[in-house]
Image 1 (tube, rainbow, N blue to C red):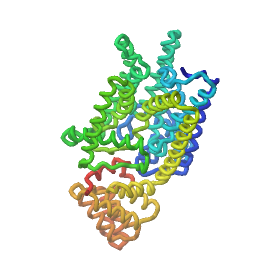
Image 2 (image 1 turned 90 degrees about the vertical axis):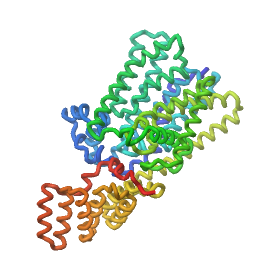
Image 3 (image 1 turned 135 degrees about the vertical axis):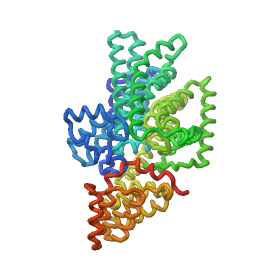
Image 4 (image 1 turned 45 degrees about the horizontal axis):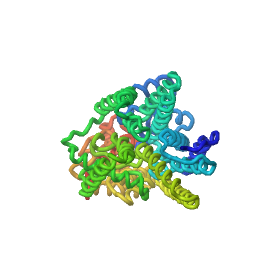
Length: 558
């Protein structure tokens, strides 16, 4: 049985976990925006520039960025813009605060899940109560300050991740409250209230990021183990409870599919074959496990070349073997299957089986939800075993080792936060470990902004060297031409704009070539180009669209 807890003791642990998490991420307040989607979600996003009625109508009825319906995410960004303008400090502060609240809620979630399932068993004593409080704090911080959380918290564009987490975790918490009060035969109105709150929070999670569409399946897993509700005589009733959740999920899937079809569409099986998707998915799952278990040298961006490396096949086979072993062991040890499904189901929306084509092979932010329930279950079982088999001396050693692990995570997390200081730092980290054309391109953009034109020219040149010439994006020449022009190397700039125009005669290219032609005294030719440019003017940057531009560099030389 769980100990009789002192009044508000769990609440104190929840508050403590949130505060510690907040302090760990304070360093992120010194970070700026990065030129990977931040310009689309915030910097150039005119939608968030007001908080009037038109804004709310547009936020809830349109998909302004990449075809995603994120109305509540837009609301939070609009609030940030209202108070902070384009000062990244405020946006980072909001991300940190939301994630810190999430970490505090994990304490409440773990306590309730352990209590209702009798998963973590202690004797009724003051010392055991203190130990239980320490375990609650540990499991929340293990999740909250894990290095894999850095991308979700420190990257401004991933506001949708932490916001979705806030509502998803809260939805699960209220679902557990609903189950507990239903089993305790509370009044029907009270039971229904908890259910409605859970359902409402779930809908809000979908309005923040659609990745939580899998929540109904996760709730069924929790019902099966550790709650033990999914029995033959109770299966129908438990499943019927999930119908409203499934209805919301199906609705958001339909909205997302139609939005994507109206924008970039989906890759066909001919473009991205089923076997390739299976291999890429198996590899990704193994990589996510590695990131969670050995969170060292996590990169801000992982590139997937269109040609799948052979090593991915072996990793996919390794996953298939582990999956079969898990299913076999799960016949007698339900917790094995529950932990496995609790990890895999939240990954389904982002695996290549369902994701759109050759996207990023892995992204640490995708472990935000998948690591939650398995972490709570594993921690509860491990500490339950040790607390009932070890003496007080060894228990204290276990506490010290757990504390040391958290300190290690704090140090690694602090280092990883530094990788997001600015675009130059971010892409330099990627290039040092996994150089590819898109990384050089984006670091080149940063160098132009910071006035380091020679460095920008070098990066654009490396981008050209590492890009498949048969599918060469015209924009690379145009951006390098702009860097040459800013560095007063107008002949080189003209040559690059000539190359860009030969691939695609964009009006902006004529505008920039006109400026360089005029600078070297070719006034007549400059006037002709200016006429062809029409109303086009300004920086090349306006035609860059976040990480989607990176996908233009999928064909990278090995």
